[in-house]
Length: 115
Length: 111
Image (cartoon, rainbow over all chains, first blue to last red; front, side, top):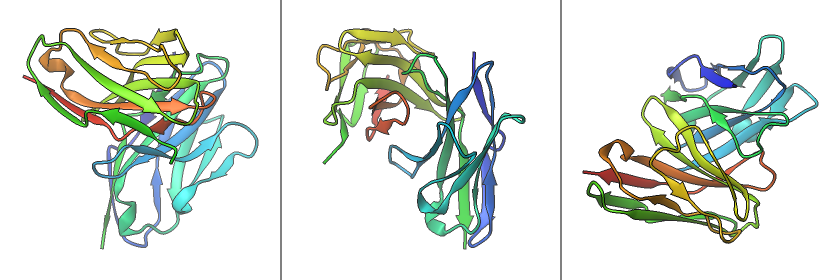
């Protein structure tokens, strides 16, 4: 069975600093990978996804992530964060050929951007 | 506007009183799912549906039921709610089982 580990539960950072939110997954087969963002008191929205092709994926709001198959990682990065990026971020995985409705989420990383 | 709607948004109920949380999407998506979100546990999938009349268990299905009689609707039923089902619930839909589109959430409290 697959699993997702988000290595940091909370990440505080100052405005305009770079940030990396780490995600590792475990799966015996190939996977599709996603990052979602949840702003306070809201539902989740898709930031970016890796389905195939280039391992560097660009998403909304200046975020990007790199799929590293050998390290089974999909870390999320942004070169310069804003106060408005304060939110909780979730990494998620679905396996190739697995049940198409079955998406596994990590426990989330709370990003707190301070002025 | 393309969206997933859930009702009610907030619900306080008592142990054992049957309840239904409705979910509807207007994007003609085949896949729909229910998740619960608890602090420190992230999102856990309760049930999902690949099409009308096709459903399957997620990671935490105990105490929940679902049905998919129409493509747009996917209600979540708690036949006999218990306090450990107090949580924030999200419905989501997906066109091909990849990225999911989430509803605004339903905050349920069972006393």
